[in-house]
Every structure is written in structure tokens, then in C-alpha cells.
Length: 179
Picture 1 (cartoon, one colour):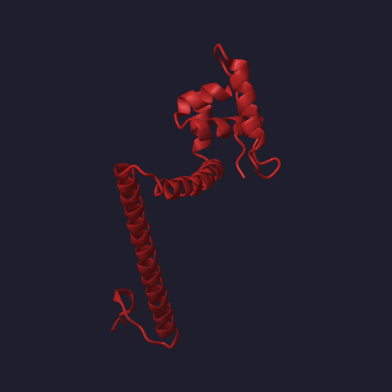
Picture 2 (cartoon, rainbow, N blue to C red):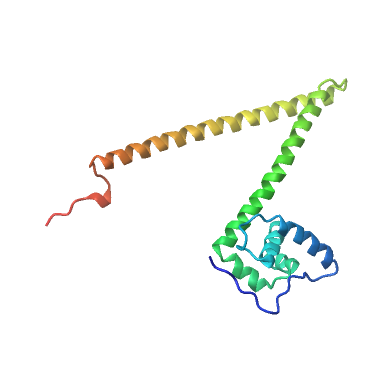
């Protein structure tokens, strides 16, 4: 594992007018970075948290109190890139879970609006429901088709491996050379 070395002039304190508030928010976010102990030090955790909130490296580095050159150097490290991707995925997953909850409530509201006396509103609600239903059907159909293609490709790959295992050869690289 590669451990980045910080220069003495780098501080974990963000600069700016509301530095204390930003520092507190970043420290809380950095504390939530669930990585193996010892893998990242405090300033790297602060930078990870800042980059999850702001993809601009220079601004995130400033918010985390890390020199932008150090931030760029850390971003070249595969373990740092992997953790940043994992953290961003976790934030997205959490946000999507919230949207799913709201979608359920929205669907309920649309259903209740079907009972309105206002014909134009009822017609619009019906159109919205039908459009969303068709979109869901389309996505489900695409998922089924992709799954079928993946299954077929897996079968072909297995068939190809079993042929090679039986001594059958094929392809450009398997042509026998004559002396």
C-alpha cells in the first residue's frame, strides 16, 4: 500500500470566512468514511469527504485544508480513487433510496387525484400515470432482453471453453506452424 507524505505547510484547517463550519461538516463526513483502519489518515479522509460533496479538486482541497498538488497526487493513487468511487456510490445510493420513498408517496397522490371533480386535472393525472406505466414497461422489457443476451453470451463462453478443453482449436493464434 502506498502512503502519501504531506509537506509541513499543509494544514487540515480549511481557509475562508466560514472555515469552522465547513471544517466541522467535513470532519463529520470524514468520520463516516468507512475504510480499513490505518489505510487513510485524517487529511485524506477530509479530502475524500470534500470530493464527494464537490468534484472540483481545487475547491475540495481548499475546503479540506490540503494543498491542491497533494490532492492531485492522492487522486493518482488507485486505492484513493477506489475509495472515492465507493463513497460517491454510497451517497448516490442513499439519495436514490430517498427518491424511491418520495416516488411511492407521489404515486399515492396521483391515485388520490383520480377522484377529483376537475376533468382537466383528472385527464392530466391519467395521462401522467399512463406515460409512467409505459416507461416502466419499456424499462422492464429492456432488462429482460439484456438478461437474455447476457445468458446467451455466458452459454457461448462456456461452449467455447469446453471446446478448447477438448483439444479443439480455432482462431488466429492457434494456427500450427510448419517446419
